[in-house]
Length: 249
Ligand code: PEP
Image (cartoon, rainbow, N blue to C red; front, side, top):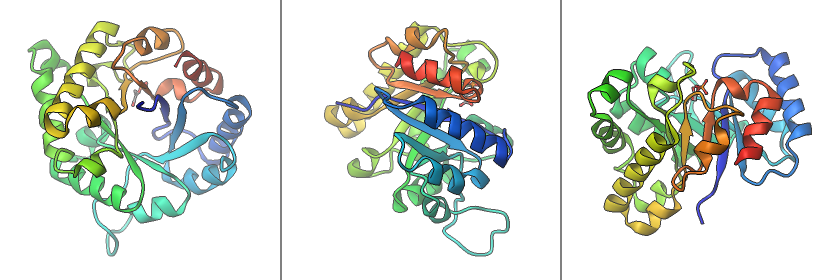
């Protein structure tokens, strides 16, 4: 049985004190979740938040890691450093990283390999932009993203990753994919995994939906058979909203 999950992505929000306050609220609110719960925080929060949450069911993710192992790369944070904080996941391939920091398929391939080598499970994001959806090439885009950065993995390593389908036109816009659009794409992604790694791996892969998912629309999205949970941006910044989304899973 594949795992169900709700993961938050705080992005570049909350200073350390604010982040610790939110993590404390989440720790006190989310006691016995019926799915895996992960929060993705900025690098500077990781060690403190992971320590705070070490006896809670909430796991911690970085939002990025370097594409190099170590050395003279001023300002970068390696996968090994992330793992040393107690974080267990790493969000990779987010559309904001692809668009604003020019992360290519090749760069992301390296990041995924380094995360896995350091026992961090990648939450690997894929998804098309608005023009691609409008011209009907969303399936080709998502296929190329998978082939470019994760279909090189061994079956065993692929089994460790979580995918997040995030249509870029739905991120932070208030526009959500319809449950039908989400289901169609998730089923397509699962079919690609089945063709590459076999039915068993496909059945076991957790595929999250992300893009303006909130307390109101989460249940409807999660009711789809191939939608295993959500990657939540804006609505993960308030404990009450995030907890309501977890309750909907
Ligand atoms: C995201 O950035 O991963 C995301 C899904 O954001 P939002 O929920 O704010 O659309």
